[in-house]
Image (cartoon, rainbow, N blue to C red; front, side, top):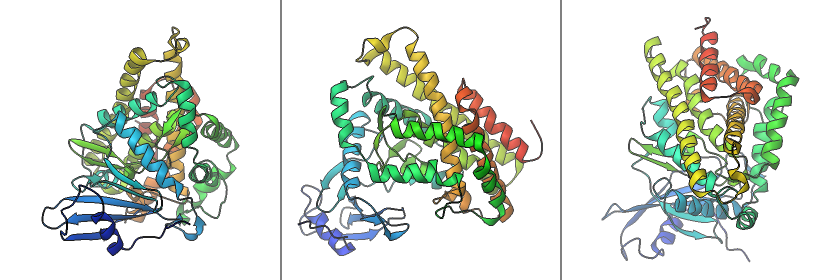
Length: 408
């Protein structure tokens, strides 16, 4: 019989006491529940005398954002823990260390990152992170390459793929990203002043065709182990450090989905500068930083990925002249398409982003929403024709100019 039960703060403290080699025997421990996400309980446990601290993350058997009417598997805690361990083995400086995993309680104990900030908040505050593009580009290259048929024994990859069958959380993605935004779904969350834009989405059959292609790739293309939800709320950051967290949506899918998620969230903040920048000059300056970061994420990823391919590819056939270029050209197109889909869902779908939703001025918020939709839909429409990352930058620049009533 399962011993699962959601922990109280007192129970979280008692659990932490039992973890070997972490805290002094009998020391005073404090806890506070810090979970502000959609799915889990998160406890911060600290030792008063030393300041040493850890994080206990417990999966709930339902979506916290909705309630018990939306049940979820507790196996996602195992998936998250195992994904973190794999990611740490490939990127030891870019993910939190996992101290323990408790299957009965669906509980993961990991390194505390309180000296970092959630990247989404940092971008809302208009901070700059000069090492982020290199860090996340390397994380994506290492993780995607070494869990794919390019860099992992292909029979071992099939076995590992079986451990990351994640149907319930994949179903959330399949519905909330590739279906609901394109119809009048009950789960959609649409502000009344952009209802017209949502209705245009629902009636756009050419856009639906492109979304169908992307949805099919998400359903069928098991290229590599994905984080599955790699947005700026799943990244802890400070100027000299980047840590990727929360891979509970991990599964084997198309590489471009993870890369596109990172770019989409940078560009959602780009759109949100309608509300966060104080004047035209500061808006232009911070948007230039964000676009540069978008470009550098891709170029750092591509450079690292090509190096890994040239030095560690396990398949002779994949070393055929020209195939690497062909693969990366297709991957860039997938990245652009998935980035567009991620942007659209954050405006008209169930779960939005604080970058835009926390803009208090209604007119500025609406401009940001419409700009994000314009960029996202343009990415979806054109993804299969994109040849370089500069074209993605040009689309974002063009759409922002048009939203402001002029063309650069």
